[in-house]
Length: 170
View 1 (cartoon, rainbow, N blue to C red):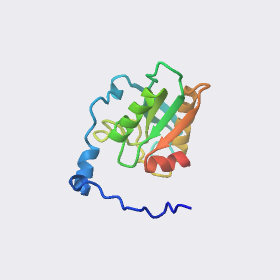
View 2 (view 1 turned 180 degrees about the vertical axis):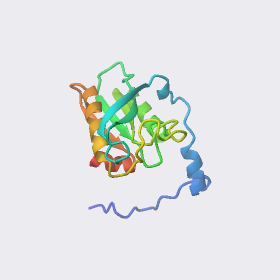
View 3 (view 1 turned 90 degrees about the vertical axis):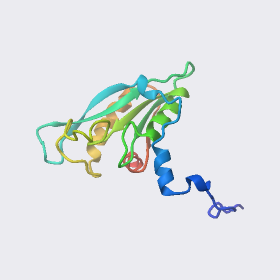
View 4 (view 1 turned 180 degrees about the horizontal axis):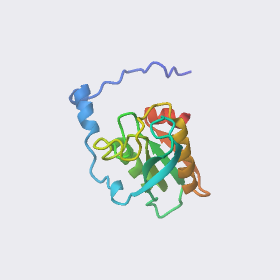
């Protein structure tokens, strides 16, 4: 029996990319050929009542970006991608993943949680007044139900990075 808990040889990254600073810089570099944002469609979603108490009379608005499959073959379904805490729909890890998925026959929807997304660092109250909290699962669930309907009769998948993975599991 193989013991997978202890690797035979420990992972040693190349010394040029071993430091945390190098990893941070590399995470900001978008590889050539990533053009997923050229044909994305912005979609606004009504995500239920504002449970933060900031605007209880208003409906929460979340937004995301849809890309249809680019494959000429079979349509494999829709994948919703949820970013991590400091990320958004346009974080490199999300656009790289979305690019690969649409090339393989999947449609994608990159959801932005409250207070996240391109330009929201300039005006965080553009869509909602209440501040994002990790407990706001209801608005994410409401948005997810709407995105799932976009899949029609095809399979629907959810992928999340870090905090987005936590939301996907809940």
